[in-house]
Every structure is written in structure tokens, then in C-alpha cells.
Amino acid sequence: MDAQPTTPTRPTVVDGLAGAIGNTPLIRLRRASAATGCEILGKAEFMQPGGSVKDRAGLGIIQDAEARGQLTPGEPGIVVEGTAGNTGIGLTLVANARGYKSIIVVPRTQSREKLDFLRMIGADLRLVDPKPLRDPGHYVNTSRRIAEELQAQGERVIWANQFGNLANAAIHEATTGPEIWDQTGGRIDAFTCACGTGGTLAGVARALKARNPKVRIVLADPMGSGLYSWIKTGEVKAEGSSITEGIGQASAAPGNLEHGRDCIDDALQVDDPTALAQIFDLQQHEGISLGGSAGVNVAAAVALAKRMGPGHTIVTILCDGGARYQSKIFNPEFLREKGLPVPSWLA
Image 1 (cartoon, rainbow, N blue to C red):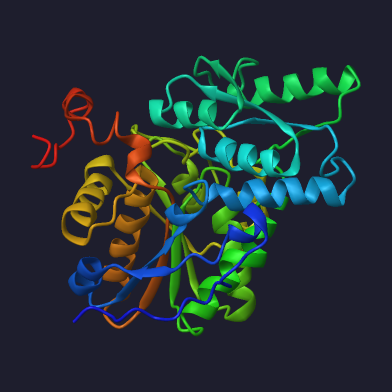
Image 2: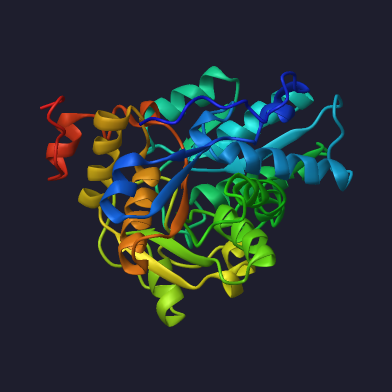
């Protein structure tokens, strides 16, 4: 029997965009829970104003810059960032609400939907070719260079630096983690999610471990990323490849993730077919449309539940919605080209 609607905990009226970020519901994933005998719960970050968990990072980074006096609401300022897309969206929306401009540098290989959204909300979008992190043309290095050039010209500008800026993890420690704890009534046995910057995992991990050191924290990693190896061996060593966007690092652990390393207990690897199976199943049978990183997260939660055994409560992050990847993971031609399964309703 489906659960009855409950009274929302969010205030009826919130103060602007910032007030609308956070306090997302936990969704019980019925089929994953039934298959494992565990309670598998997804934090519905796709319900954020900008459509992803990265709204929190955008707010946290800009609020931190304001607290440091680097930016002042209502006065001219520029936010510069290199991103796979979602952090750029979160930063741009918060910047708009505060009266700042935004310059967002994105690899041109990211989904068309995210690029179109960034243009739509007014970001100064700069597309670059995909390069390894050591290359000066990498999107992160390009964004840092743009920020430095603007600073040299006397502009009031910040380089958001989501990978190394600990304000990213801090807002998850202050909001996402405590929300999960309160929503589960403290009855949580494990938390798992994938990492791009590591801010979500590190921040939630620190918040949960502070409340109960026995909560198990597990990094979920797509193929092609070296973070699984980093947790297991201390060495960042990547194997394989993945179509997922915005998660996984092939060359180095980001600063936010290193900040939370002492709270991470284990890691799991998830391949594309397994992640896609979860995405397609959730959409077809539970009406929840999600992007690729959420598929990795749910698949990891299922794998973790099977390891831990029935009766446990496991929480993960439903990072963003499927509409942001329509041209890729919901595109039969793209999937066939990659040798990946096509859902029956698209075949």
C-alpha cells in the first residue's frame, strides 16, 4: 500500500531562491527496497530549483564568498567556474538572484540539454574541447585563467573552484547530512553516492559520522574513474570508461573528497549497463526520471544492501532528472552506438 501524503516540513513561504534550496524529500525506492529487504531511500535533489544537487554547492560557494567580502549582494561581481554543467547552473541561478554575472566554462561534449539551459538562464557560456587535467586547456584550468585575468583587470570576481573550495562540502555538512538524519529519525545504517568534486559525499559523511560513527559511508564510482582505486589502495588508477557526466576522476582525488577521506569506509564500482538498468526501471515502474549519476548511486545502494543484508536503511542521492540527458541516455541511437541497452519503450 502506498504511503499517504504527509504534511510538508518546508515553510509555506520561503525567502527567494536561497530559501527554496534544500529540504528535499526522501523517496522510498519501492522495487530496490523489495529486492533487497532493506529500506533504500533516495534524497530527491532533482527537485531543487535548478534541478540538481549542485544548487546547494552554488549557494554555499557564493554565500562563503560574500562572508569573506569577496562579493557583495547587489553590487557588481562575477562568478567564474569550470563545470560539467550542473554546478554552473546552480551558480548562475544564485548569481542572478544576488546581482552577479557568471562565466561558465564547460566541455563541449556535455549533454546539449545542460548547455541549452545554461544559455537560457543567462550564463556567459564558454565551450572548450575535452582535455586531461594536466592540460592548460582543461575546463577547470581555463576557468581559473579567466578569473585571474579578470582580477588583473580590476574586476570583482571569484573563481568558484568547486573541486577545491571546501565551502562545497561545508554546505552539505550543514544541510544535506542533517536533513537525512532528521528525515530518517537517525535510523540510517549507510550512505552511498558518487563523487565529482566529492563535496556531497564528504559533507554528508562528516555530518552523519558526527551523529553516529557506525553509519557506513561508501563511495560509488563509475568505470573510467580512479576514485574506487584511491579508496581501496591509496592510488588513483582508472580502468574502463563510462557515459556518465560530472562524476568520477581519472587523475587525482579532489580537495573536497580528501577533506572527507577519514569518514569514507569503502567504495563500489558500477558499470554503465547496471546504472542504466536502474534508471530505466525507476522511470518505467516508479515514475521517477533520473540522470546517469543517480543510476550509479541507486545501483551502488542496491549492491551495498545485498552486502549488508536485510533490515538495513541505506540512503543515496538522486542527483538530477532524466530530461537533462534526453539526447544521450534516452537516445536510442546514442545507446546503440555505445553498445548499451535501449529501454523497450524507446526501441
